[in-house]
Length: 311
Ligand code: SF4
Ligand code: ZN
Ligand code: ZN
Image (cartoon, rainbow, N blue to C red; front, side, top):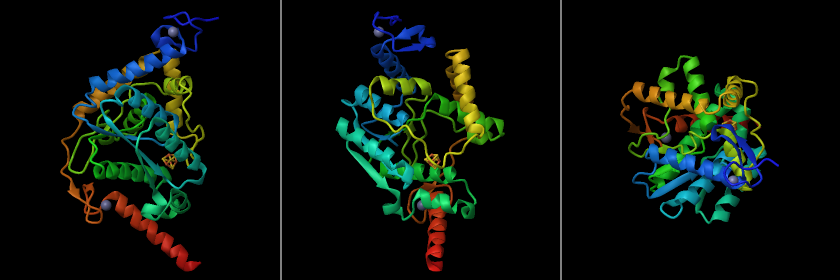
């Protein structure tokens, strides 16, 4: 029997960068201490009394909710935020998010995209050719908008999201390799505060994806293990994520060193914040007259109306 290097209990997982085999208890400790260090170093919770936690129901956001609840639940008031995107294949995922809030006694807001905004991501996927934009890009706008809006309405000081180290790496490589330096410069673990713009923090941003999954399993957390039907296959993202796991296996800890370097580089080239105005339709912050959410929503609703009039 392989034993945990700290306590001699049966080993649960091998973590090379921690120097070998760890039992469940020490794996859980390793991950939580790592997150605590990241939160402290990047001052993520300075002045935060009310914190939103965006939970989709997948492993990262469910682990995030449990870690934040365990580490800070007695000091910070938590509010779960979940957006039901209206994707039939993902309905279970949002139900699991709610189950986790209930289990921990964390209050939450569940936003139903179809009910509150009049369209679903299943409809967007059907219309994506006519919208001339990939589904995931629209989905990203929708999620960011709704999470910020809820955070503003609820008077939250910040919102934590489940982005992990592999997400950070992938974003950095994808933007750099295609020369999109302005986008790369937005890489950060804490996004800036602005008028009606609530900062987003990424407490898992320096924790490897596989380790988060092992953490979730070690704690028997309930999370959705499937994937979205609209997730693009075999694209650059998948290749970069595969490269990330290979690098982490060959040189444990190197991925984290890379991402820390990317974060410093992005910080140095970050342009001054642009002045925001308020959207004429919804009053939320934007650089344009009408925010990107309202513009895309108007297009979607008009295409849906067109479809209905033809029927
Ligand atoms: Fe949205 Fe794309 Fe993620 Fe599906 S894969 S939830 S459409 S961003
Ligand atoms: Zn141990
Ligand atoms: Zn708007």
